[in-house]
Amino acid sequence: MADNIVDHSGPMGKEVHGKDSLKAVLMQISKSMKDIKIDTKVSAYDHEKGYLFSESNFTATTTAPLYGMPANTKLDMNSVDVVKIVNGKATDHWVYENPQEMMKMMSEQKKGKK
Image (cartoon, rainbow, N blue to C red; front, side):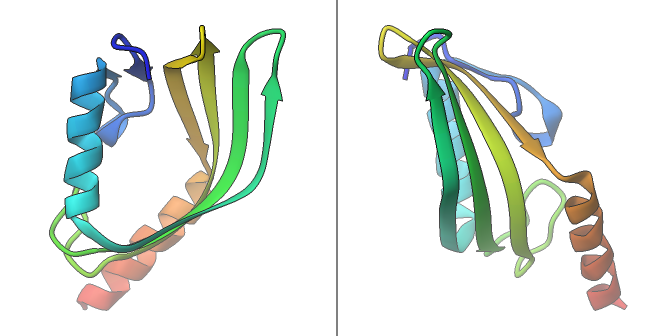
């Protein structure tokens, strides 16, 4: 990972700039979840342009409130990650998720509160 990496899809839609900042975000997420599983279904690399594309499924359970989700929220999300690679290091990251899946999880979370 490059020192000046930019995660364009950071928490709450905010960009995360720099390797140390991104590591801190990832540590916060890992400390606030259990049973984390990432199943990469397919990945492809464009050698000419330097982009890595991965389709994955992410599941986990929050152990503490995180980004507006209460503890014990079950997550199950499919995504496509795009990573720009320059000189063998990740310089940029984007993630694309299905908004319908997110809305379904939020709806189920609200039903559980009633």
